[in-house]
Length: 293
Image (cartoon, rainbow, N blue to C red):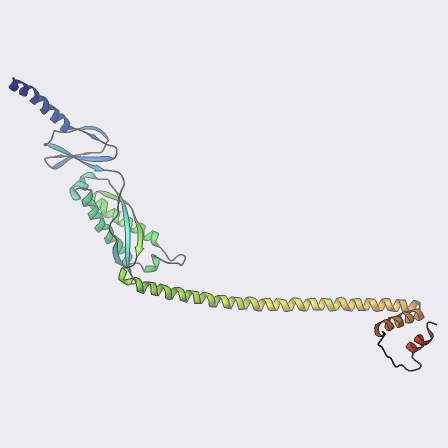
């Protein structure tokens, strides 16, 4: 009885095993290779249910076809003006040729190791031809980091497609620093440079302030001179007009005009403490003695 059951269930188990190893589902985010006895025979790119020969005759190897991000360890590089810098970059990449990728890289870990070497070589070559000011600078138009990273991306992508079957979409810098042993001297140079710039700015500011003050004093003198000239002209015009009015009034009644002017004179120089000495024939004295004629 047991032997009969064994002969019944054994074919069923073998059939289930063959079906389970012959069918596989390819997800939309994946790309695959079918290998026969370890040798690639077919590339599978379209998602859905796929059929192959049962294992161990044929096996499947699946890769992620989405954009992947790799963050290699920071490395030290030398610029064209002999500045040691530590740069931390990241790489965006994806698989475009799974067969070449499998043959050259094997898996994602192997691909990341190759990418690290490739990108670091391109970064070192690019920075070795650029001075430090093209990476970090406060002057407008001197910094050119964006163009440098684009060139690194293009050269790395060309080599990666040709040799590894992957496409490098972007290489970007995350962080820039100096080696630990160089930080004190770098900070000292930065301090000296900023002090020099601050001194230059103060000197230029003092020079400009002196020019502004001189120009302001000049304008002040011009304005005062113009005002004085206008004031003197107006005063002269007023005096002339007053003299004309006096002359006109004097011409109408000279005696009354003389009388009024005399009284005005009294009002200006006579008070309780005034003592005056006048000749006997003085008209001023006659008016005090005799009054108005």
